[in-house]
Image (cartoon, rainbow, N blue to C red):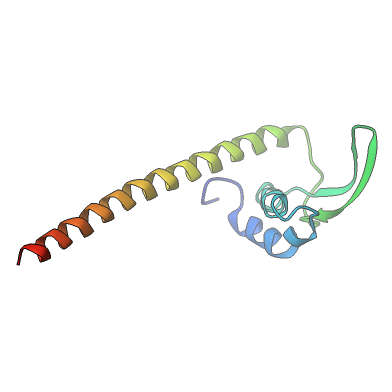
Length: 112
């Protein structure tokens, strides 16, 4: 598997197919991508605090969640967080570098 872990192609397939089914437009892509990446099925009939909810199934071809998937999900979450941080840091340094280069170019044009 490439990327930051799991199965990237399966994650992308699940997002394209299932993200819009989720009641939250923010959580849908994340939950669908994790379901696909981990090869598990999420959603269906769920119980939260004694209240039963019927949600659409994400990554329907995936297998049922097992206890060991919790550790895999945490590991994937940490990798995704680390990759996001790296992209943000690189973007910030890239922005600063580009800004300084533009300023240097403008000051050189102003001299001539």
